[in-house]
Image (cartoon, rainbow, N blue to C red):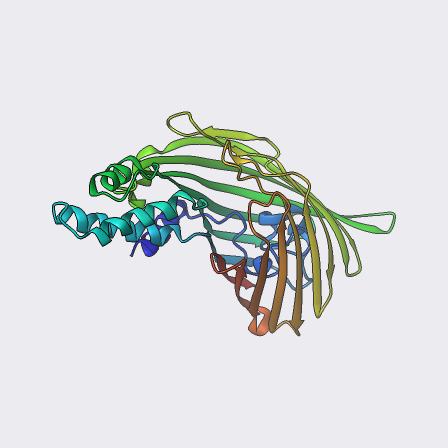
Length: 381
């Protein structure tokens, strides 16, 4: 049951803001989370605002409604073990401490398992966009939201299997939860230029950001995912994305600078800060009628929560086969050079009958304890 409650908590971070994820794009997610040179004009603000002006001759309007994404990394089954431990504690306390020694030993084993567990990490989001391509100035109005959640068990030392020792141990053990919620609303502007017979597109996205942090430290006995919002801290800010793409026939080279101005927001107790750092990504792409290939490389790392060793910096590869605009198959590979996140294989499927309505789904796999999924529904006219 707590598995489903966790998913509800993640969704509740982003649902009230009607926004989209850190890149909740099933096409890009299926291609290894690439998109700085290969995203279409409708998804452009999520990757590179310059792509807002890169569209087909018959494109007059685009609507993304919505895109969603969820990724869970639970290497050591922390969710299940906490759930099982709480069930055993409830049984023990309901009996007044008179349960058999096997139950007491089982509680201690659960605590031993949690003491060695890696932190649980969950991220997700939801998004919308409306694009109006035009040769004078292309525009895309979008909103996106995003959440990252980390939960780390803090387990007291094992002092024996007696009822008193185990009860004292679980009462002294806790789960430390940290979360960051993020929402932005922006407008991407872009225009194509020709210089020395070379074609370039430049884009800029002014945006407004809402940032929130949450911190909960509760005993392992009483820990509840639903209590995350009792420690909310808010911060709002203006920011800017910029990007450029060089286009030569089916070949592309691009650069994207996201969040030009760094921001930091602390937790309510001042013990942790979340760093929203500037992210610079360079990309090379091949976009043909039947085949697209992309390589995206982060030139900067994302620090995220201070003191949590959760920095990330990615190299991404993606490929897409397109069956005459009606169906697409996608695959990709993603490497975190900071080794915070395991290397992931991605895969995706697109269905676009008549090239007017597009339904995209994608998944990622990095072992049975790190899974992700996303979906898009888009309309282009």
